Amino acid sequence: MDNYTAGTTKFTMKIDYMESSGSYNMGFANLVKNAYSKHPFDDLNKNNVFNQYDPENTVYTEASSFEEGTTYYYKNHKGSWKNTKEDELNMLDTAEEFALGPKGLADKNNVTKVLQAGYEGWNEENQQYYNKWYTASFSYKNLQIPNTNDYRTSVQGFRTLAFHKKSDGTYTYIGMYNMLLDKGSDEVYGFKPDKTTGLDVF
Image 1 (spheres, rainbow, N blue to C red):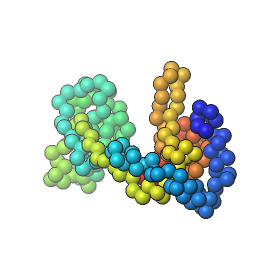
Image 2: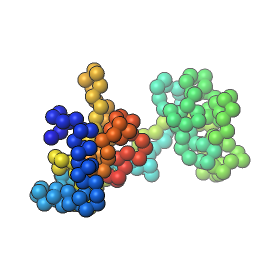
Image 3: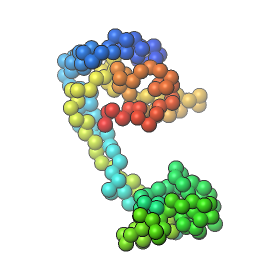
């Protein structure tokens, strides 16, 4: 039984009905533990499949020129890193705006949440970042899933990776799901996951 022979919503609803209590869920976990010589996560751990973001080793490099489509980083009023894709200065769109720097662009658009004198992030360490744009080189470190015997799995013995198949044949990754924990509703599996969906794996 899988997504190619039965719709996910159909069989997860049945599992949720049958395995909704803690005792049933633990029973299913024990079944998986005993039915397989090792948990599937053991192989994934052995092959270093999982990684997690390592903010301490992310490198920020000062940017000297504007390149369209690039996400730039800057320090906000608290001294934290923010970016031009998701945060207050997401209006950065031209080389002329880039030349203003974060503080200049913020002033032009009546934004106050940038690094500047008089705010809590203004200190000796952060002053070097004042009114400058940066690019980021992200760092990741290996993540080992602990206590693999405690994880319940899908009916095939694996946690399920969910993808949305688009009309052009490509796939969009949705998230990792515990089929006995996540309900087969539109909110969870209908490609509208909230920020907490799937976080239990970590």
